[in-house]
Image (cartoon, rainbow, N blue to C red; front, side):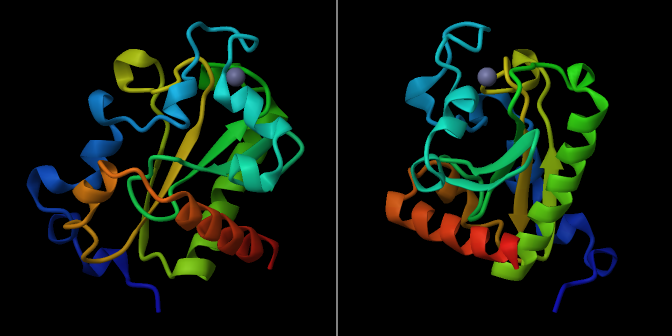
Length: 185
Ligand SMILES: [Zn+2]
C-alpha cells in the first residue's frame, strides 16, 4: 500500500544532510552514467553516452523502455535501487530546446517510470528532476536527462552507502528486467 506522503512530512523521511534530495542537486555527488565514457565535449559525436546507449541492446544499455523521442534507462551509479533517467534521443542540453512532442513524451515517460517503479518495487515516493548545466550539477550537461529516483520510508540510512558503491552488474541487469516487465504490464 502506498504511503500517504502528506501524512509523513519530508523531515521525518530524510534527516538533515542525509536527505537524498540534497544529493540529487549536489554537483560533486552527481551520478554519472558510465562515468568512464564521460563526453569530453558538447557534441553528439564526441562519445556522449546518452547518444550511444540507444544503439545498444536493452540488456547491454540497461534500457528499460524506448519511445519515439525519449527512452528510459537505469543509472549505473544510482542514488537508490531503480534510479531511472528519462532521456531524449536527440542531443540537446537545455530543457527549452525540446520541441513539443519531445516535451510531451518526456513527461509521459516520467509518469510511466513512476508507475513501473511502484509496480515493481512498491516505491513510496520519488525525487524527480533535472540538473541544467554543469554549475547546477549535471554530470553530462550536454545531453539533458530527467532523474526519477524512487524512495521508500526508512531508506535514508543506506542511501549514502549506495551512492558510493558501484552496483553489481547482475543487480542492475535484474533490476532492468524487472522494470521492463513492469513497464510493459
Ligand atoms: Zn548526446
